[in-house]
Length: 231
Image 1: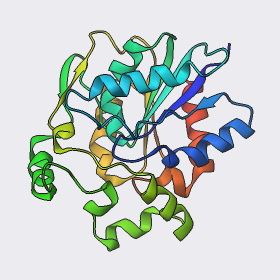
Image 2: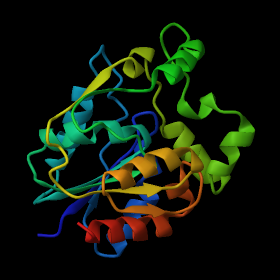
Image 3: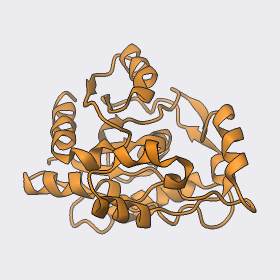
């Protein structure tokens, strides 16, 4: 059975960051699914089990799930090992798209310590502004192809508690028991692409900003299919 591409958005963003890619892949005959993580920040910590539950429970809506190819963007990369371990379906492959890389085992902080200090400076009464409010206009504007897409993505974002970013996410031993690969968009992820290459993973480059999947969904979809074929 053809694996289902499960496109996991960053919990800081919303599922609309994957919809253009999902629509193109579905039109080309691929099985694709975009779970929503917009409510995972509700309640107290730990938050990572809600991410796992959201992906697993969403797949119950499909008539015949079969194996999955997990695709994570940005911070969602840290959750992929726990997601894979929590699914009822086998994982055929994992693709990290301009994404954080989990360690091979142990646990991973949701953000590096130096970034956490910056986020603490942005929080008001323990809650962070939406992700797009973290950046100035000069940095943000190039991430969007037009005003309509920008409005959709901005309105789709959750607000997350600071405690979400203070959590540690467990990394099950042996989670790399399937093919993994990395798709880099932005220069900020050069180092992580190098780490993926050092692990022996296929690495592809589609130059753009961190949200390039909404700017070039065609190119993104093509690279995902190509990387999955290397599995």
